[in-house]
Each structure stands twice: as structure tokens, then as C-alpha cells.
Image 1 (cartoon, one colour):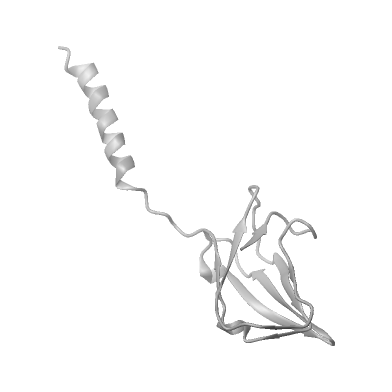
Image 2: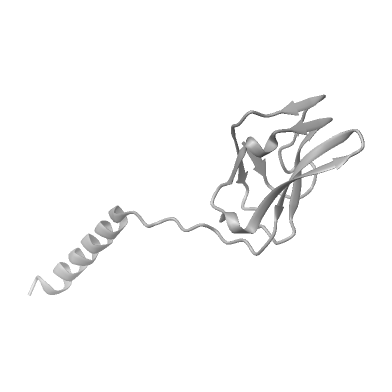
Length: 121
């Protein structure tokens, strides 16, 4: 899990691997903390190694953020590589359905208000 609270160094998690980083699967999750507000064009270089192989076998998830507005890519320079998370469009937060419990609670409270107001007659 990588925490992201801003764009500046020290405001997000980074993994530095000395040597070759070879992956055979797994999940990397990003969590936006401290009320951080995303914008299109934001990016974070989160994993550094001399060489990164099989990173495409990893699955990535961003807590509460729709998959259509972000991407992961590998950048290569002489002697080292890095993985970058980039926000590609306006942040669209995935919807979370309202649990039926809240609907039941709300209707129960409305019944009590109605009973108190009209039922005392």
C-alpha cells in the first residue's frame, strides 16, 4: 500500500529497490490521505530500481477512484527505471451505494416525526 498526501517528496510513499525488481504478481494499492484533492496531470514516481521486470503482472487499485482517469507506466533512464502513477483526467470517484440500513433508519425517523405530529390527535 502506498499513501499519497501531496505532490512533494515526503508527502507520498516510495519504494527504492537496489538492483533488479522482478514481479510475479500481487496487488499495489494507493490510498489518498489527509483530504488530498487530485487534479488531472498529478503524478507520483513510486517505485525505483536498476531494472524493473514483469511489472505488468501486478494489479493496481486506487481507493475510491474510477479506473478511467489514471494510468501506471514505466519510465527508463540509463542505469535505472521507475514506475509512475499519473492522473490522466478529472477525478471521478467511484460511487458507493448507500446501505439499506440508512434507508430504514431514515424512514423510521420520519414515521416517529409523523406519529408525534399527527398521531396525538
